[in-house]
Every structure is written in structure tokens, then in C-alpha cells.
Length: 324
Image 1 (cartoon, helix red, strand yellow):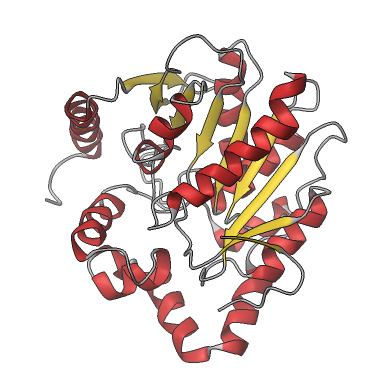
Image 2 (cartoon, helix red, strand yellow):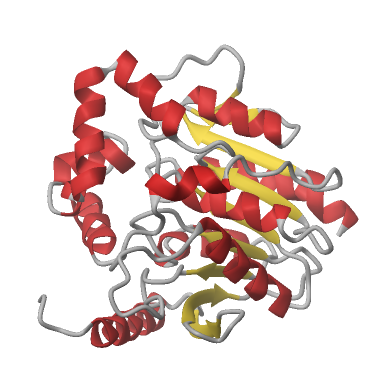
């Protein structure tokens, strides 16, 4: 468990890849229709038009002048992870909500390389995000989780002429990467950390419920919910999101523009991103980290997801919406 000294506490294999992607898209559309939440699926082209990216969206309930929210997932996830709870929560509060699936993730196309094993570089993902944001015609609040937070950081840095209205980083990898966090976890809890490292290297959490819980969820997430999310995680990634061995060449991420308000939030029971990592990201964003009690890495899906949504919403209302 993290110390809380320096942060705020708030209570089948033969099927072609193209066929798999089309099946995932059909499932997403069926889920949206069944949910009754007015969620829609569509695809957008990348800047070069070489791939199409899955986008899930839900428009605000009623007329609103609040900024749209664009959500970016992390490794082994896809756009679905935001539509579970956050879409309904924020649409009810006047925000248009969009969530992208990165290349090779969810229902998005694979990278245009026949033997691709990596979805793309950090720069490629950031440019995909910025291309979509520009298509909205309004500057959104960019919300990134885990390695999606790192993508969001770089997207903000590479959009200097038109930065997002705000940048929210949830359990985000810091601007220098995850290397130092891995070392800290191994030093503090070598056995538990070795298990989690093994799970990420091998993808064992896709089929082992105990490992999936340790990596992403709290102890009080029900077995039924855990099994459902484990199935979603298992089908989310056809290739790795990033090549971690090459990531350092893209780091550290430059600081955000001075006028960009940044929100940093994580969970005290997160064994992927630690408190020091949150504090590093907060210092980079010229803010303070908010740490949620009894919350694990997937804070948008975890038992206390609503506390995470409330903290994010309060920041948007206080720091972004008034000047939007």
C-alpha cells in the first residue's frame, strides 16, 4: 500500500486479424444497443489514412457548453473501458464523451505492416489522438490512463498550437516512463512485484483471475465483474501497444504548455503506478496528485470508480469549464 505523506487523499487462432477486428466491432455495437445508453460506434481514419480507429461515443444529455472529453486507454485495454461507467456519468453532467481504441487494440485496424508485433510508437499514437481531437472542432479535455496517460502527455506536447482544454492523467505512467517504478516495486515487495511483472510479460492476467485482480482491480471487485473484465482485457490487444525497449528514445515527455491545466489522480492500492510516480507526473503538470483510498490501477472500472469520476468532474468544473 502506498504511503500518503505528500498527496491529497480522496475518500480461435486461425481466424484472420481483419475478421477478428470486424467481429469485435459487431460486438461493440451490440453492447451499445443493449445498454440503452445511446452509445454509438464509428471509425475515424488516422492522419495518413492508413488505418481506421474504433471510436465509442455518447453525447451529453441535453444542451451543454461544457468541453467534450476524449478518453485514451492504456495497455491491454480498449475504448470499452471508458464506456462502462464514465460515459453515463459525464454525459449526465453535460459532456460529450469519446473513447478511442489505439491501433491493433479493440476494434481498430492493425498497423499497416504485415508482421507487426507492436501497435505503434508513442509519437504515432499521440498523433492519432491529436488528429481525432482536431476533427471535433472544439478543444476537448484529454483523459489518459496508464500508458494511455503517457500517450496523452505527448499528444498535449505535440499540439502546442492548439493544446487540449485540459489534460487529465489517471494512474498514468510518468513522463520519464515506468522503469523507476518497476525498480521501486521490486525493492519494496519483490515476490508480489515479480508476479505482476511475470503477468505483464506473459499476459497471464488474461486467463488467471487472481493475477488479473492483482494487476488491475481491488479485492472487493466481485468474481462476476472480474471475470467479465478479464474477458474484455483478453480480447482487447492483438499486438502490444508500445515497444517498451525502445520507449526511452521518446522520453522524457516535454512539459505541457503553461496555460494547460493538468489533473493527476491514482489509487493507493495501485501496484502498477506508485505514489512517487504520481508525484512525478504532478510536478511535471504543475499540480498536486489526488490519491483515492482503496482503489487499484483500473480506477475507471474499480469498485470505487465513482470517486474517481467525481474527482475528475470536480476538476473539470473548477479549472476547465469556467474558461471554456
